[in-house]
Length: 255
Length: 199
Image (cartoon, rainbow over the protein chains, first blue to last red):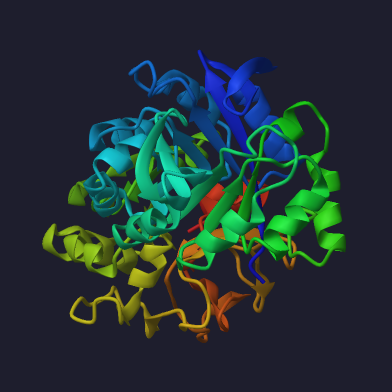
């Protein structure tokens, strides 16, 4: 049986892993390569590295960090942040990433999704959607620029368009829940997941193992992202996976 | 001892190379037919549409691969590369596969989400050299929308929308539907088994 994935997320700024609460108040959490390896050995099913300041400061993704992190990592590795063109994506793949995550650039140029998918395959393209509840006259609005710029697009409609343009997965972040530890937005996750046939990765709000059980059972997520809950050792991956297994969720455990 | 990773424009081959580097192997990513013909082992990876394999025919790479296989060169097809080892795929019926295994690659049924993305279990169904010392029910990482039903040469299967071939093996010919380069220690062990084959 296909298992539900737990994806360890490293938010990187200036070559260091940071984690903010609702996109602000950053705290230092360590070296990306070391943390990626530790999570991989600890049972993470994938690693996502998001260069959170790349878009804002219009600089290239930290290719050297990607290269260093990828070198001895033999589980799927996704890189996002600052990927604006096919050339940007190519450079990230050359540095060792298996998938790129695109957000702002896809909103302003949806053709980029198709362009990368045709060259590298749909499995290599994740469209990240930062969604905020009850904003802009739609149920959930998609935001660009690291949550700073409202796009005017309905998140569910955008997810379906991304799928039709060749996205292989959707990485869905609830801006309302991000960093709060109050649990995933299961309603949002379910509304997106039930509308597409590609996998949906839920993100934002994980504070306990029970929240992961909820987002798989009620939110219909295919995978879930974990960041601060892992970095500060609030929950060990082993404990998380055991609790998921005990709740009847199929997980890769023991690895 | 050179392993040729055959590049025919179907996706990113860096991860396969990286895993072989880590195993201490001399591997080159190449689209040069002569280099492919001379290699001591061949790996054909690949992701995306079956039609992409047409490039193997038009570039002369298929002839080089045929010649190498005729001499008994060990061959590993990964994902689309494994599918190409079969006769055909409904994804691109007009494109012929390598045809070293008989069978056709077909889409997952409509009642399961497709693509099949993530970690799933191997059910070992034979005594393969590629799977030597790999525990039964190991998890490996898949990402694909088409698959090959079990055939005589299937040595491991996987369950998703029915049973399909996860590993096929005959003599010096090996195919894996999943990505060993992304399947943690299990995948690395499988690649090591391939690298250590005596031909």
